[in-house]
Length: 542
Image 1 (cartoon, rainbow, N blue to C red):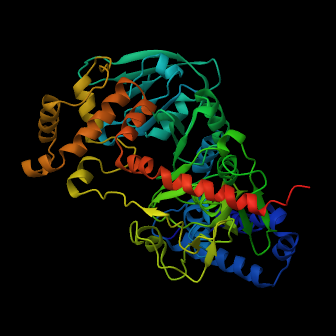
Image 2: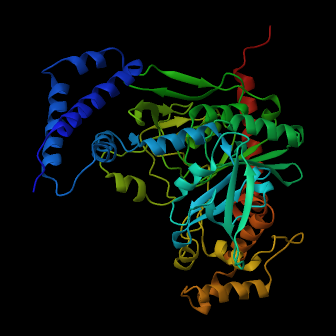
Image 3: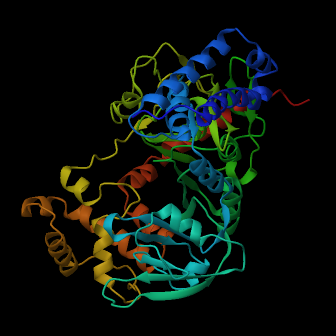
């Protein structure tokens, strides 16, 4: 039977109207008072659209086979659908995701200090206890399975629910029980929560004079501060060459990208500008750091480098400040404003951004579905040159409308079927993660200096795969031995040290990083040419 409409129906009609009008009011600072007028004008196009939505929802609520929740219909259907009809990047963020996004941007919270994730039937596992955090000091380890928090069973919970239990006010205590491979009894630690600061910046020496700077995302608001602190700690005056790694960096906060690019440019140089239909033009300019002007830079990018990463790479390329090496970047040049709406938020495109030479980096999406836009792009292939031709400071041709095309191509090696079976998802528990659980067991992970997986370790890994039901041939295993060795070494050093140490060892053996070192003379030539052009354009001294 169909349930009769009643008070709930009236409440949901009001919810529809309030959500649309409320969103307009929240956007008023961006779009001016006209939105408020339209939202309040009966009989116009907006009013008819609101009535159409309310009418459609009434039919759904009265006739759908199962009971429905208005939040599900609007938060997951109507509002995202409306925004996706505009462009691929406008979106609605549900309340829980919005809360987590705000926490990531602050890069600070109170809790125990570790990254956790759901691992299928095993439950919630520890991916990384942050060095120096309460979790680290309590000897919680990568690979631990969280079985209880304050005595409450967590084996059926997801990672978000467990994370909420672990966070709490500073100086309060929480009891965490974990299960370790090879142990019959859980290990329980009483941990005092503290202030947790996270970092997405890696800075270390690759060799004397050659520095590596990696930024994994621009979502955090402490990137500028972390870069400056780490550069000061290593003494930037000793840097003769820099490798800036923005591979796999999907973007984030524009101001953090501007700060990173700007430190390597001259004061006042344009980093990026943005233009919109209503949004006034904004030009973001560099605040240079004197020591950062002196050395050449090779900038690593790939097809997943997007948005804020492209702002950095586009600015450094247009000003001839860095030699860009890798693949053509994703091509996202739309600016989203975060606007609270209900308990969630709209990410609404308000402008396009342009590199200093005037390039629009956004690639065409007018004839693509959302799926095709994100998945069907030729991997790593540079788009054909477009009519949007610009020039760098020294006159080199650069093209807009399709991401940042590298100065020198270096395609990312594609994974084969065997590799995808063993490590199918980035930053998730994989075969190497689970092998390390059994390899170390309850022992505290310790490795000697310059450790490498030997034949016995490789053999044990092969036996482990067989015991877990992985299917492969001896020929496949042999053909992938180098890849296997690299992944085992990374995982073991992650356990015995920390993520940063494991990353450093991996980058030391990364062929693209080595290619960047070999390409440094090209970056030096660019820097010299940039200095020459700048000197010519300076007004003559009086």
